Amino acid sequence: MKHFEANFDGLVGPTHNYAGLSFGNVASLNNAAATSNPRAAAKQGLKKAKALADMGMVQGMLAPQERPDLHTLRRIGFSGTDAEILNKAAKEAPALLRACCSASSMWTANAATVSPSADTHDGKLHFTPANLVDKLHRSIEPETTGNILAATFNNSRHFAHHQHLPEHSSFGDEGAANHTRLCKNYGNAGVELFVYGQEATNPAAPKPSKYPARQTLEASQAIARLHQLDDENTVFISQNPDVIDQGVFHNDVIAVGNQNVLFYHEQAFLNTKRKLDEIKHKFGDSELHFIEVPTSKVAIQDAVKSYLFNTQIITLPSGEMAIIAPTNCQENEAVHAYLNEVVTLGSPIKQVNYFDVKQSMQNGGGPACLRLRVAMNDMELAAVNQHTLMNDALFTRLNAWVDKHYRDRLSVDDLADPQVLIESRTALDELTQIMKLGSVYQFQK
Image (cartoon, rainbow, N blue to C red; front, side, top):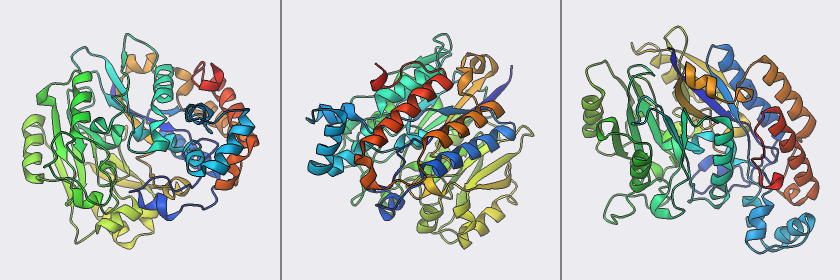
C-alpha cells in the first residue's frame, strides 16, 4: 500500500479583501484598505495547486466559506431583508460587517488539525476544526469548516470528525498552523509537534506582551486526546513569546517540518535544545535533519516579510524534498541567499520552487497557509470525495467558474453592496455542485 502526504488547498472566496482584521499579522495590517483582486487571488491559488499536482503530488481543494455572513449579522441583532441588514451594518458597525465578509478561510492551515491513521489508536484519520476564537472574523468559520471537511472526507470507516473545541480563550486553537508531524515514512507512526503560545491555566508561564498568543497548551493537549495519540508520539513546544511580538502569529511563520526534516529559525522556540532532544528520543534511531536558520543570516523581520518558513516542504515522487516558496522570498536578498544555500547542506531538501501568491501574501498568508496537510494511504484516498481532487478537468472547470463569478477589483466599501452577496451565493451554490459537497452553507439550508 502506498503512503503519501496530500495537500488540500483553500479555494480563495469571492469576497477576498484587505480589511486589516488580523492584529498581530503585520502584512494584514500594513495592507489594510488596499483594493484587492479576488479573481487574481483565486487563480494564483489554483495555479499553485495545479503545479503541485503536476509534480506528482496528491492535491485537493477545500471550498471557501459563505461571505458576507448574514447568519452572524442576524445573530448580533441586525434584522430586515438581506440588503437592509448589509446597509444597517455598514452604517452602524462597519468593523463588524468587515469581519463578516472576510475570505480568511482560504488559509486552510487554520482549518483544522489532522492526525493520520498511523498515529491514532483506532486507525482512522482524525480531523478537529480549529475554533479560531482569537479573531472575530475567523471565529465564525468552524461550523462550516466542519461541514466542508465532512463532505470532503466523507467515509466514517476511514475518517473521524470531531467538533471544534469549546469557544473560550482557554482553548484557543488555530489548527495545523501550530502543528507539525515528523516521521520516517508517511505510513509509519510519527511524532506530532504541537506548538503553543501560552498556558491559559498557568498565569506565570511565558507569553507575549504586545501581540496575542493564539494557541494554548490546553487546546493542543485536548486535540491530542481527541485524536487518540500516545504520549510517546507527541511533543508540546512553547513558541518564543519575543518572536510572537515581532509578528510571528503562528508557528508556521517561523518553522516547518516534513518527514525527517525540521526547518526552523533559531529564535522560534523556548527551551529549544531540551525539546529537540525530546523529539530525537521519541523519533527513534532514524536520521533526523534539524535545519536551524541563524539570526545572523536571516533576521526575524526578513523571515516575516518574506515568509521564508511559511513555505511548503514536500516529498516529490523521486524521494527528494522541495521547498515551495512565495516569490517574495526571491525578492529578499538575505532570504534568497539562504534558500540558495539550504539545498547544499546535505539534507533531503534539493530544490526550491517559487510561486506568485501575492494576493494572499498581502493579507498575511503564504504557500503553507493555503494548504491543509493530510498524510494518508491509497485506501483512504479512494474514500475521499473524488470531485475535490485536483486534475486537468477540475483545474479547467474551477478557472472558468472563477472567471464567471469573481470580480477583479474589490474595495472594503464594496462589501455593503447587496450585489456582492448575490454574486457570492450564486458562485458558492454552483461550486457545491461542481465539487459534489451537498448543502454545506447556511443559505442552502
